Amino acid sequence: TQLLEQSPQFLSIQEGENLTVYCNSSSVFSSLQWYRQEPGEGPVLLVTVVTGGEVKKLKRLTFQFGDARKDSSLHITAAQPGDTGLYLCAGARAAGNMLTFGGGTRLMVKP
Amino acid sequence: DTAVSQTPKYLVTQMGNDKSIKCEQNLGHDTMYWYKQDSKKFLKIMFSYNNKELIINETVPNRFSPKSPDKAHLNLHINSLELGDSAVYFCASSPRSLYGYTFGSGTRLTVV
Image 1 (cartoon, rainbow over the protein chains, first blue to last red):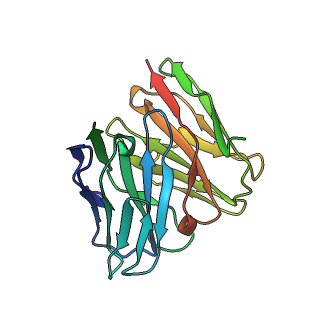
Image 2: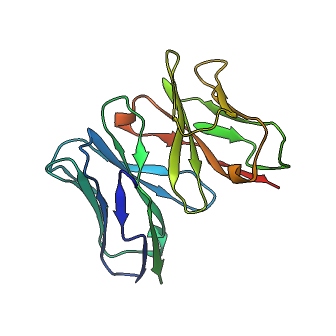
């Protein structure tokens, strides 16, 4: 059983559509991060959220940390083919602890 | 300049061999990590290391060992390679996990 559960595992949408990816856990995290990974490359950090209820925006991407710091969501508005990739959430149980990753969401945005 | 660099990018070897993967970071980060990504893209922590403490994931076989000659390097040594060791191995570094990791581009290990 994974500590962080991501859903959906796979998502295929048309350019211009909106989507939301979820990252859920029964554990409390001191911080939660979202990464995007493209084929043949390592994950690249998109955002870090540390405060319950926190919302951060990165252009068309909106990240939210749950009030109880157990879950997070990533919303993409008007998806573009360049958004295609593997989206990973990762959490740290305490400052200085190793990150635990979710299973990932593979997103494909078709032109 | 690449922030976290791993070599080699690809490694094909026979069962039973011993191999090493090198990792270097030029970010001045205190902590370095090794992760294994399986065929389903799940990233699993193997080791966390700073100049004071090595934390080993208890599920990692003792055939795997990290070696750190200095703060900027964390190499991964694997003895007696097995078919199940085939995966992509990622090195990463961070000032603290709270602030996110910088990953290398990975080493695809294939054991035949």
